[in-house]
Amino acid sequence: MRISVLLLICISFALTSCSKEELTFEEPSKDKLTPELMPIEEPITINLSAAAIKTNRWVLNMQQANGLLESSENSDFVSLYDNSLAALVYIKQGEILKAEKIFDFFNDKVQTELLHGSGGFYQFRNNKGEQGSRTWMGDNAWLLIALNHYHKATQTQKYGVMANALESWLRSLQIEDGSLIGGYNEDGSEIPKVTEGIITAFNAVSGYDNFHTSILSFLKTNRWDSTEKLLTAWPENPDYKYALDLHGLSIGIFPDFPVEALTKLDRYKNTQINTTNGKHITGYAFDEDKDVIWLEGTAQILVAYQQKNKNKEASDIIKNLEKTFIKSTSSENAQGIPYTTNHGTSYGAGLLWDHADLTPAISSSAWYLFAKLHFSPFTLGHKKDIPETDKFWKTN
Image 1 (cartoon, helix red, strand yellow):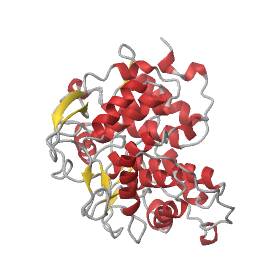
Image 2 (image 1 turned 60 degrees about the vertical axis):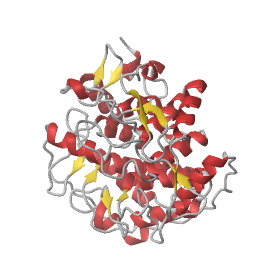
Image 3 (image 1 turned 120 degrees about the vertical axis):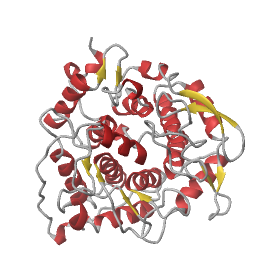
Image 4 (image 1 turned 180 degrees about the vertical axis):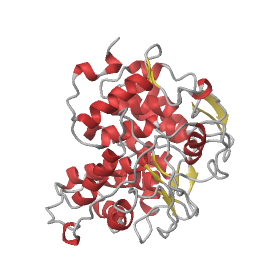
């Protein structure tokens, strides 16, 4: 999962951050920003259900002239993570030009954002692409994942400079214990270490070298519960030690991660009344509060079940997700899935934003489409040849 706004705010107040000197980057010459292109592969033919076709239509139609997608309708709120997910949806279906419109927006800001100051693309901005805030490491890793898929699908390195700069920035965030700083707030303060973002960066950065070895060493020592055999989100706080996203992402990112991670979901499972239609929906909360169903995270678990060939469990989740559709107010015959079924708390005790349960969300809809396309964004990053001795999740 990506980490929600309130999750990051909650953690940033609760955890102790690590010191890091200001980062500097070498700016690429302008002639390197548009390398020579190679032929694009033919679009992929995908057979979707009627419900998924309407959801796909909504995601396609949410793109603006500047290439960006709002996170939900009429929100004037743009997320780097959500746009990375949309790009992955487009690439998987052969909508290469639509993916390029997203990448072109960020490519134009390589020098003014990614390579400027402490580095990184902004996590949030308005729908004009202005008023950026925070540089969250995890969302930048998601953009790199999307670029990796684009370059593989098109057999080009059109955005190679941007991808290389993203990788360099992610690597620069690694500190002595092997963890990664979470990025930087507007005031320059560091965002604390977040397990979800660290393992996403592990997947996004290609290959397997000291960067990856050090991450696994940190996770084993600091974020691994050897009794439960689960990665932990907030080990210092027993009430929020575990988080739903780490179950699904662990399965996706580490291809031989124990399937038992999917048998320990009862701590999040609950049933809520869907705000917009009054239907009872069963799914999973962000944490053990069980006061809300997080539909994006539930869809992530769906993809994980598919990866482990748990077809009955996957089918049950799809049925519940498809009871939450909200019709688009801006696109005809289109629909999406909201962020949550009802209003409640995000990870931790902080409340969700007001419309989280009232409008279709790119994140939930994209993960639903990944499941319908039988696609995991993490599979491309599996080519790491991790030594068995480094796989702490497989050792006693």
